[in-house]
Length: 105
Image (cartoon, rainbow, N blue to C red; front, side, top):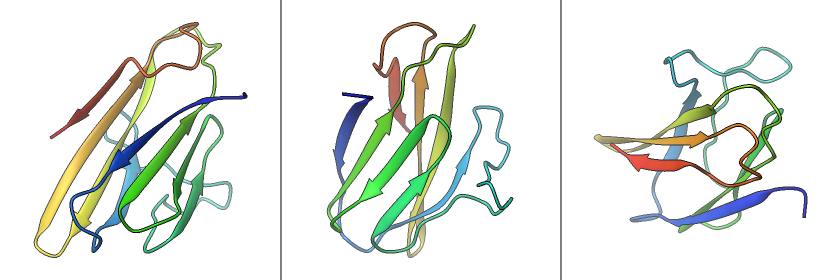
């Protein structure tokens, strides 16, 4: 395959992706300079990862190999009415396609 993926089961079906941020907290944007976000079903495509929501109960994250010099990652900000949760994903350089760390806050 051309990437490794993880499927996360979500608590409830009424959540959306409010934004995707760098590990430093900067907003990540697409090629049209629009902030990455997703309401409902669909996908977010970035240079080195894809986030896919095929159904309301799960989220699939596909990450491509890190050929860079250092660790990379992103923070996924999930929200539902009155509640937000951050999911931090990290990937070390030359560690194949594997996620180094997935942490919910």
